[in-house]
Structure formats: structure tokens, C-alpha cells
Length: 204
Image (cartoon, rainbow, N blue to C red):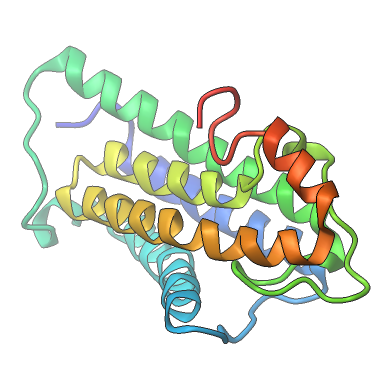
């Protein structure tokens, strides 16, 4: 049982992915970068690329063909109408919000963009505009919104597990990344960090 039409949801996912790829190409000048650095950096960035470029399109295709429930053994059969409405509407809202936030962050980063955890280059200026006014790591927030949104849309424990893995990797990566940012930007970054929350405005 579903409140939202699965075929339309699948098409929405593919359209959002297409918009994000185009936005990234225009803003940063590239679509894919090879993950480098420490094991944690490579693991997190590879996981991110796999989730966005493999898992999401696959979920979209399975939704369009109405076969997601068949191939996903972790799918939860939610028979309570109000709960299903909440899960699917909230899931769609989070999912769309995640893509919009990621595109906004990419546009504001522009050619300063690098994969998460990378050391800022000498020519890179510190970005504190756009979504960076409200959170220090909006792209991580966006990825978490997309993962949690997909879990709500699909009522899938597997996608919920993806969100949990993402959360652990991001929480581990943030201190590593922020140490490099502080070394690169010094007191300017310290002041910014004291003023702006990590992932959720005004909360965390």
C-alpha cells in the first residue's frame, strides 16, 4: 500500500539526480572525482558516490517498475493509513530538500569544491555564504536528508541502515575535515565554527 504513486516518485528521483549532475558540472567544472586520502576519506566519499549514483537510480527504476517491495526483503508493510501518509510525505519532503540543499551548496562552492575531508588548496577562499551561513557542512546535511527521505518513501530498513552508516561516517569525518580547515584558515575558521552549527541550524 502506498499513498504516493510509485512511478511518479521514481521519475522525480531521476529528474532530481539529473538536475544535481548538471548543477555540479556547471558549478564545479566536473562530475566525478576519484576519492583519495586516508581510509576514512576514501570510504566516506566512495560510499557517497555509490549511494547517489547507483543506489538512487536503482531505487528509482524499482519504483517505476513497481518492484521495489518484491526485491527488498527489508521492506516494512505499513498498514496504518496515517503513519503511511506521514512516512511518505515527510520522506518526499526530506528527499527534495536534500537535493535542493546539495545543489545550493555546490553552486556557492563553485571551483572551491573538493571531496569531503580534502585539504583546502592555497587558492581556495573560505565559503561562508548561502547555506554555509546556517550550517558548516550543508552537503553532509543534504546527503543525510536524501538517505532518510528515501527510507521514508520506501519504508525500507535497508535504506534506513544506509542513513545510519552515513551518519556514523559523517560524524567521524567532520573533526578530520575541520582540523584541516582550521589549519588553512586559522582564527577566521575558529570564529566561524563558534558561530555556526555543524549540520542542523541552531541545534547541532
